[in-house]
Image (cartoon, rainbow, N blue to C red; front, side, top):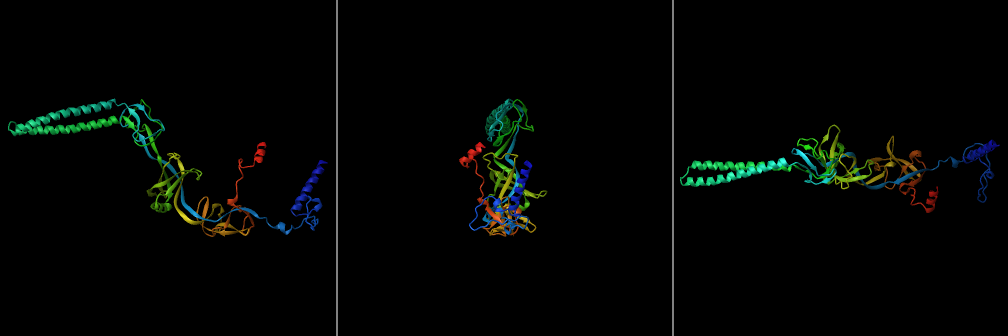
Length: 416
């Protein structure tokens, strides 16, 4: 019995499907009850296979998304990948030998030029400085005595009470002691410099890295590693390469003023920071055919870090009043790029000549006029003269969020 019922249900479903496919016509009495207009007659029963009605043979309209051709100013850009570099980098090294008494800075600390970073045992250099000062004082006393003797010899020579030779010899001794005082002063300056080197200071403003030497170690001027590396990150530099074909346009832009440049996240959309072109290298790399360019960023939020790889976008110029279409509207075929233009409910395949093109829009030099409607999505079933149902791209809205849904819907969703 169950098999018989299942067979009847299958045959009934097949009959209804065939009716709606216009393969057969089922009497109205066996179809769901419908109200007929006055004077209308039910369909005449027709069983068996036959040609479908003319209306059934017509292709249904193809739903598509479309957008209007616009006139707007378009930025001419050049994209590249670059590396962030510190504006200045300094490896702090000891300039004298000695035991490191203390390390004053903290790792990762922002320092100014001249801030104290560490101290070396100064006792040896303090003694050398004191010795130089004492030697200078000794020679100063001798010079003062020699000058007094010179005055006496000059007076004696003037009265023929002493020889002129003795006065000349004393004059030479005074000059010798004056020169010795200059030597002593130079030795004092050298000893003072060595003593000052025992206090290690930051040579540039910036941020300290990881400490490379601990307190208590013997440090020397010839140490390769140094104590710490300081990098200047505000402002900061970005180095990247552009093809030599874009060099002239970039140079022309720099003659007109500052050339803006953006540092972007790997998605090529999220802005990290904005800056300007600082310098173009003085030669093209013959191996790669590119030219190196350095840009500078304020980096106030510290989103750029030395050694980081970022995407770069350079704004070279602006096309005024350009005719544009969405980049998704442009298709390519054997005859070149084309778009589907919607007119009177049908589409027409129209060849276009393109200028600038990026990931969001394309500049049309020839082929369509501003205000025309072009298809941007739903190309799979399109051909010339295809009937379409158009939904304008800027009229489509995303589904409402949970906060925007009616209260009843949210309750039902919670009960799920």
